[in-house]
Length: 349
Image: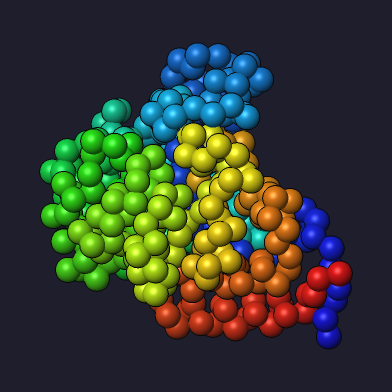
């Protein structure tokens, strides 16, 4: 039996969803930053919540990607102990659970969390502990994506790839390359991705966010990307766009973040709707819940507001998210069958 529905925040919040592009260090709770700083004797630029939020979050004004990334200095300062990483991972999964996210992929770079003596391996243990605690309490499934950083040496990327191999089947589900694209091409890190692909590990790369489609080309053809983070510049190369479409390489779309980094001017000009209409596999994600002051529910509602997406569109995007998730095929198909039956009960008003 179908139920006619109007698109509301309450409806979207209740739909079963994936979150495939979400940075741990960009998605902390503001009050947790203040509390962790106090416990670990970290000096913040302000302990007033309103003032700190203005410092760590982007509102409506465009900045560039470099300025956006500087916001992470504050969040990273309090994520230098196992306890803080475990807490942040648990709270992120808990927040995702409140939006009925059934499967969450959390990405972060261990190399950014070793200032107080943790080893990269200890950071992974800490994050996985928090996610496991969340799964035990909320039944939310999750996985970790380890990020290399474009502006940090390819040697470090290779070490992080080795770390990913060590934690394969222990909670790490993929490997990513993040950071500023211009002057830091993905092909410089191809040895890390050679190791990753030879060990049958999933790959996703930030590409086509602040640089042209050649960045996406390198991600796919030099680094074997199974998904692309952002990809807003893909539309500039029709041949590559067709290749991405034909091979069902999913795009991890983060609309609000793309506006905040200056990748697109506004929601109306975001290529998301063009990609969706063309038939590409697109997913909706938050990128950084705190820094972009967003949620997954907000991102879906923005797609409804600016592009008039309805429940049938969201069914397709949600199922595409599960199809693109870095999980085993057996688990994926089981979940898709379950949620497809639920989603089929809704029809647009």
